[in-house]
Length: 313
Image 1 (cartoon, rainbow, N blue to C red):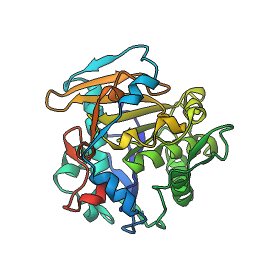
Image 2: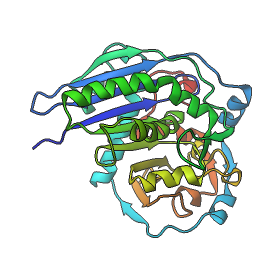
Image 3: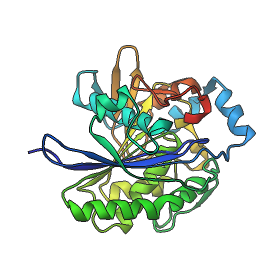
Image 4: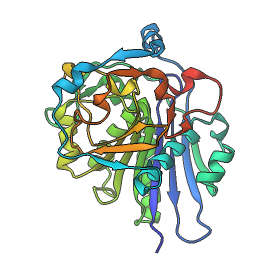
């Protein structure tokens, strides 16, 4: 029996936010409805560009301040875990293809990973200050604080996403929901998983999960604890020494949620898993130097479809 699923692909960039939803129907002729949103408006600051342009950064203090992982598992390129990471990296890139705003036409990538995809709705969202990292109270997780900019971005898109998912799940209750995103889109995706779990009665820990690429830290320990308490699966993917995943600073109260899948060596295709529910010292926090250019390619897939460098940061 084919596994039924719905996948929410959410890529929220500093300069080019985008969101789409795909649903799989059973049978050999399965089609993939896609909901997609894009907005090229920028709310980035000069400081954002300065940070992005810095190629190397020290993060030695993170290893010293975080606990050890209870175990570290390792995978090579032939394992299902590795292939699943690469599949979600491909989904993130398809959302950054500007040609696919109104139709599923992102070329070889779509043909390889989702040949039967189709767009069922396209929409634009208002530009939001997703780079605002001020900690504010989360609306329903008691004691938790999260990035104000990311929280505002979720509020901006939630009604559209909720309505689309509700309609799909009413039609096919066996669908599963998987939120996928890259960069700030992964941060928005994390908050969206929490929102859907809290507000959409048709999903819970049995049919809702997140696959998040190159995610900046979203909130505090109380926020990360929520996912563990709700038994929600969050897979956080990190490419080698990606700079973005080390922001904001853990000394300001931030911490990553979920399980970390770290592509320790992209050339050798070696991936490590450090189980959550919080980040530990034994995966990407082992790196002595981070490199911003390693945010651009995830699992051998470039995270944009044009020459606009800032489109994917």
